[in-house]
Image (cartoon, rainbow, N blue to C red; front, top):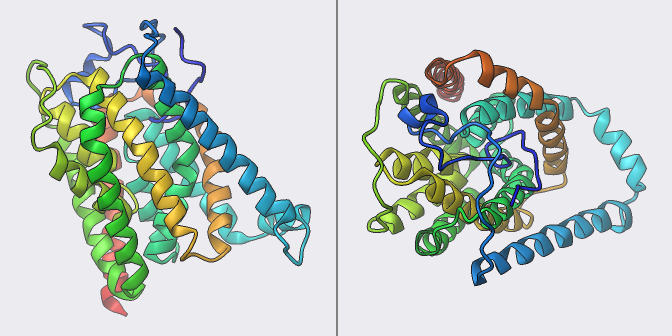
Length: 335
């Protein structure tokens, strides 16, 4: 059954992961494949019933956000709040960040979080605000991705459940750290983490992988915990840490990417809900900007994928993240 969503990011895409010669460039570098039409059978199983639960949760979130905007008891009306947001310079900064991050994510299949967090930190956002806005903006893309993979039969049940709980626990630990440690102390640490992730992305351009083998769920628990923890505290990293580690270890890409993306939805929802209790209303300005920028980025991601080899993109993105994180570290230490 065809996926019902046409994507503009790593989260929403038509993936043909069974074709032996599809996306050889991405396959050799252990990257999520670029978009293809797929016709995987839709097997009616208990796992696929989960897709309706995810859709129900997304619908509930939309209703809740609409209620908060128009009936939330604000001194301004919903339309006045929208007008105020559009005139906020930070909103347009977030639009630019979302455009760049989504274009990169759409072309490479990863690095949305670490790219957006790096730019938001450089723009002056505290770590908790940068991570919270990034995860709130990702809720719907990860949700649609999870449903798509479920309906296409791309989820390995054992791997999914091995990732789910430790990933969520790691994310909650990250939220606790961001909520209880001074942002001034965290900012250089987060920048250092993003610098390392930038070097990791850059190094992937020179790494080749071996032939595929079946998924091994051993050691997945600590990997998922680390991925959830670093993704939350650093604002991104679930894809580069978990997806590329499993695919790069020669695991089957179809079921690995599907399982990791579905687990990411529940992780993202948990993080987003947790951040709502510790962040002020300013975060919605960033979320709206990131979402709008992501929508605008769709054609740019397609052009980058078509005209630039994955190896070149990895080097450019890795170099960009390293440069921004180095600047953030210098500014933090110079204060």
